[in-house]
Length: 264
Ligand SMILES: C[S@@+](CC[C@H](N)C(=O)[O-])C[C@H]1O[C@@H](n2cnc3c(N)ncnc32)[C@H](O)[C@@H]1O
Image (cartoon, protein in one colour):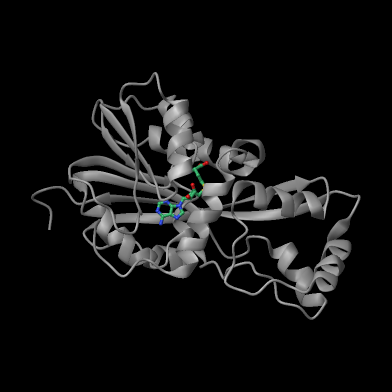
């Protein structure tokens, strides 16, 4: 594997949780699917060579991979994920696609040979322990003039859920996602890029459905200890049981280009 002290308990828990979720992931990944399509549209507009070599980080079951392959024809698309079960599902989905290969890899410790035209990731890097360090390592794998393109969650995500907790004197397990400017500061040196933001509002049938969707896709692990059952029931009731609830996703799009040879 690559470098770095990257085996935190949080990461191991998240990987286990995604592993368990792989079988049913697609049934509850509406937001990931929608965002994957938006990222694929942006990638299609990049100045990429014909038949680019692509490395994907955190591919999951291949939802974004499929969206992107509708728009980009690669010479090789190497789809990687930290969860072996996700890799197995993705590999199965693309078993007839000879230019798509799957491998298990921690995106924070990339073990691949440099030379990619594009490194991309849809809604995966919010799970990294050290985003700036990881991006620096990832862009070493990009050739001069190549691209990094990713989506992640920004501050404001799940604000409604966090707010209900606050009103009840509780603290939600939602991570403190960085804001757009904070994310832009984490883009690596050696190139130029920006981070833009878009808010997607997703309506769930009720609070139980929101929590169930996070669990089904494996995205429910948190650093905080769980609430006592009574307090959690109170949160659910206050958020909305038996009536639709709206949850905001602040989606950050990071696009970055490595400087070309000859540029300083
Ligand atoms: C919300 S899912 C997104 C999956 C897929 N990109 C999609 O659009 O459906 C996040 C994925 O990131 C993976 N992941 C989390 N941490 C990772 C890491 N350090 N390296 C590689 N993959 C990681 C998880 O296993 C999971 O499959």
